[in-house]
Image (cartoon, rainbow, N blue to C red; front, top):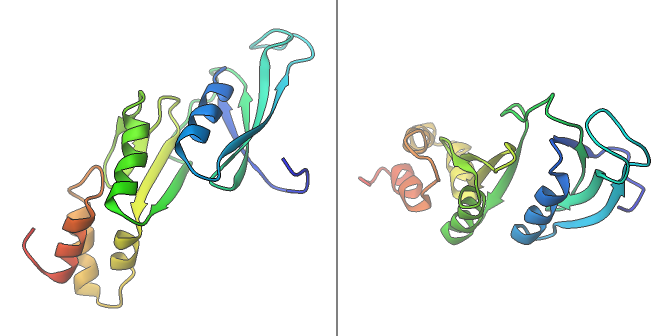
Length: 164
C-alpha cells in the first residue's frame, strides 16, 4: 500500500483473507497483494501469528482483508462491479469466480467462494440501459432480467429491436 490513501475498502473474512486476495490477484488485472500482517497476540477468533490483515488492491481499489471470524458474513449489500469490454472478458471473470467455488445469481451477479458479491457488467449493457432511446433501453433491461451471466450479443440484439 502507498500509505497515502485515506479511505480503503475493508472486507471481513472468516480466516481466508490471504487466500481470497491471492485469488483476486490471479484473476483480475491491476490486482496484487501488498502486505500480510500477523496477529501479535491471541484474539477472539485466532492465535498469535495467524494472518490477521491482508492489504491488497482489486483492479486498483485499495482493500484490507480482515480475518475477523464468522460473525459478519458477506451479503449483496456490498459488491465489486467489474466493467467488461467483450464477451470473452465477461466470460473469463465470470467463469473464474463461479468455477472456483462461487455461485451464479441473476443479472450479471455472482458470488465468490468467500461469499463476496461481484457484478460482471459488460459496457454494452451499461450503454444500452443509459441510452436516451428509452424503448431500446427497456428492451435491453428486459433481456438482462432473464440472464445469469450477461450475453452481450443478446443485449445488443434486444437493444436494436431484433429477435434474439
